[in-house]
Every structure is written in structure tokens, then in C-alpha cells.
Amino acid sequence: MKARVLFAGCAAVLVAGCDDMNGAGAGSGFMTNVPDRVQEIAAPNQDLTAIRIDPADGCYVYRHVGPVETTLLPLRTVDGRPICSRPADQPAEG
Image 1 (cartoon, rainbow, N blue to C red):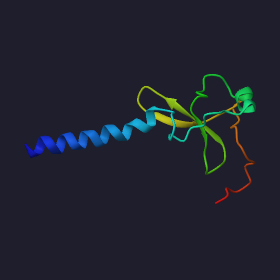
Image 2 (image 1 turned 180 degrees about the horizontal axis):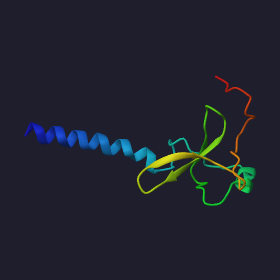
Image 3 (image 1 turned 180 degrees about the vertical axis):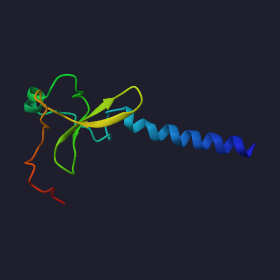
Image 4 (image 1 turned 45 degrees about the vertical axis):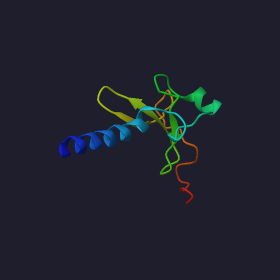
């Protein structure tokens, strides 16, 4: 009986931990309003409904849902350059 209760508790915790990666809703850290300029220069086939700025380098990343895992990838222009919110040599504030 104790094993069932322990298993059920662990399963609930694991399932709750996966919830944040699957949605782009409130509290997920994704932008709700993508700047128009970013929409104009972003290459096609990137999910513009789930983007945010990486605090490490100031560049935009988007959520890519693959067949095995969901990960954040750099948002790029048609010619492959990353789209950033600040110059590359400017350090992050903090």
C-alpha cells in the first residue's frame, strides 16, 4: 500500500514538472507581443508564438517542439544571423 501511495505522489510531481515546457501561457516567460520588426526579419518555419530573450546574450530564442524533446533555439533571419535585442559586445545588466 505504501508503494502505491509513493508511486502516485512521484508520478504527480513528474507530470506537473512537464506542464511549463508545453505551454506558452502566462507565467511561462514567453512574450505575448512580438515586436513587428522581429516578425518582419525572422525566417519562416520558426514558432513566433513562443519567443523570449535569452538574458545571457540578449538574443531572441524560440521554442522548438521536436519529435523527442522541446528545446529553445536561436531565432534567426533568412540568411541565418541571430536576432538580438542588444549589440553582441554589450554586457548584460544585472
